[in-house]
Image (cartoon, rainbow, N blue to C red; front, side, top):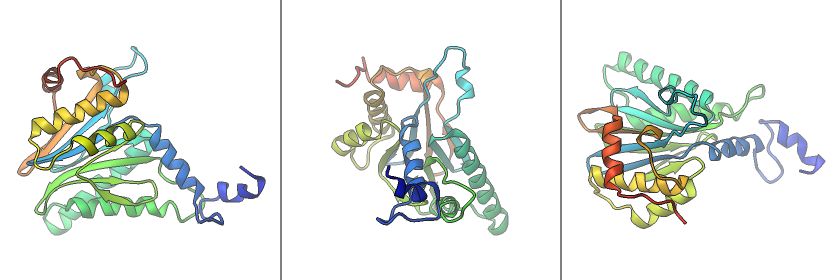
Length: 243
């Protein structure tokens, strides 16, 4: 970077001459280095799948949490800086509870996502802070149907039929472009997601290193057990790394 650009690089409140906010772009890079996170809508709901491989055999796998419940019918999966994600999850939970107490109804998924994105965007406007170095895939159901949203460190949000964040995103999205279909069954969506994750990490899947969740209309957001994940991985057959 040239010396003249350093002022734009250091200040979140200053645009570069070509209209860029470097700190936001660096936050996006933090997300790109995060674990591969996948979300898919299917005919009757939404699934989330996350790679949670541990870096040391001394780590307790159950202590690594990548999928969070927000309220009864909404959950999210994260990629990027874990501490930043935890703060956003706490804010999302508070927003959902405040809405419930105030209006005696569950908040809609889109309204909740917009509240979180408003918070993210605030951290791109003022000095003394930095953008959140995390992205969220938020899945949920409400009276308007099933939803899957991706949030960006800039505060932008996009609704997806099938999406991914993290280091394996290019591989996953390429597979989804070719193989995703509308009105997939739950099992078809899970198998496609697990297949894409296996290709992204270039390893055979292990139930202990994969975290999955599902939400359907009228049913609470829940995590799959290791046995359920193992059964689905078994249906993939002998999963081979992508060449």
